[in-house]
Length: 309
Image (cartoon, rainbow, N blue to C red):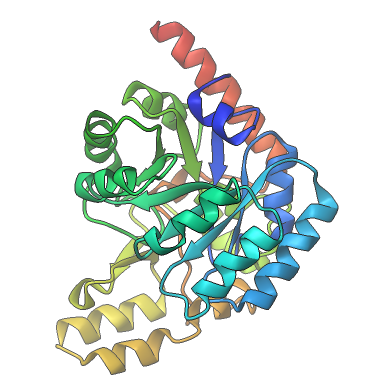
């Protein structure tokens, strides 16, 4: 399937794996790329040295394109931006800020820059700044979220910019893939379903929580701080929401969540940790290899699009 996204990124299928902190390691990124999509290493809050190591390990597993997601609030964002260039990575996705300060350097190195956006205004700003595409991410997604749904956001972003739009949020199978293309997207970003990929290194208890999750099992914390996060309901989210309701100070809220994602992903603490996942978790039924996931999505998605047209 050829779109502007497959051509720009040099990939077989217009499927990008989300750059999830602690989850999107080199093992997952390489497997997605080998399966024909675009794997992404999630830098999260990691140091530049860790990101460099992850990139080098991914190179040892695949010679296909893969990218790095940079959270621009990371204190080492400047160093990570340079690592991307030094290591010859050709795709960067960005979040939590404006990548303008790195654009000249990245463009000179031939890096494709694809920011995640949650509004039309931000998408237009990114296009003016030289972005090659944007990821329009709806509030259905896991982790840090905006306020507009994927169904409403994607077509408005498509109408507002001339660069390709990748849809994200609430997409886990061929139906979501086909729906995204009907909205005008030329690719999709998928996170939650890849968390249960065989090659994903998250703790088995984390995967089990996603597999048994129902449609109403996610909660959004952090609304009072202006940094909402969607995750699976557990003891931690219940305590956090109660503190928010009671008007707790930011420091008290941050104390509760400090290191909580790592607790869930690495240690398997699904009671006190943060189990980031999108509302689509109810469609995630089993652990599968990345190739199987991508093949299923593409087969069903293309069949539905062919029926439509």
